[in-house]
Image (cartoon, rainbow over all chains, first blue to last red; front, top):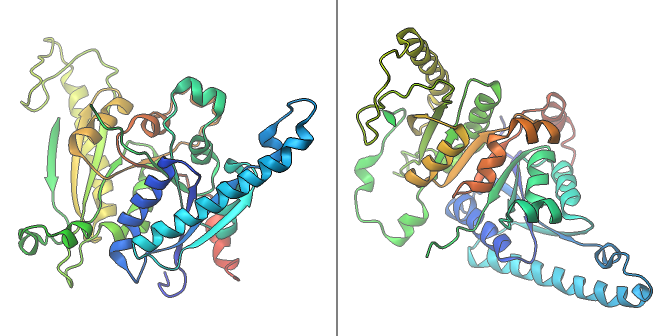
Length: 162
Length: 204
């Protein structure tokens, strides 16, 4: 196996949540920071910006006016997520990570990105939904774990036991 | 719970018994637990993990960097109703008189073979490996083991069951993904097409 330029690829999916931030930090802590500058993986940080129209859904008359506002808001969130990801990389002194934003449904985007970059590992956080929430809201980490064409690492933020 | 400690590769304990400074703490390698059973998928998962995660877990004798720890855990499902004593630790449940001796022997043989195969895969990778045998419901026991040993990462294979089969047969990897107290890595069964074609498509 050539160790020169054929580095394995790791994709980390991030959204606006605390769990995502934790997942990214944990991954950088364990897989990147201690090995600078020879990182064992090439890192891509991917954010999926939901489509404004699908986010609003079929809410009846008046949706057409709401869409631009929703879209602007989503763009702001996406920018915030990208900034946060870059800041986290900076704080751990991890360089060379590529941050990407795509529009669409998170599950599909993550699986597509894995294929595009031929990633070996996909890392996602987990909202830790219970069974009912999962059934209703759907779980991105679940979907990715079963549909991505690579191994999936699910990083959960540990609940603080009182 | 019986634990067999079997050290393979270099154990660089001498250099690391010094006090842990903050820098050292960051450089501590991963403690990983891999769940194996007789299925091919779990061995594939073990091979994949040892291959791709070698950097984060192996010892580096040149820099005196201590390696991480790889724990191989195997759970005997209790389909028998007999409970037999487990190595003289806390649980002192005694078997009914008619524990089928040949069955127990057969089981031990299978387990030994299993671990021999697994340790073969880990050989020469410079990582301290230990093995653990548990009894009970695989998904619950694995999650319990994670809690007790405080590992950093749990690695499981995936049978690649469809949604319906998963609902009926139950999926250990699904359960662990939801309930394990540490990050979990689910290794997909290797696809015959993708791994070979990635080498050709590396045109970027």
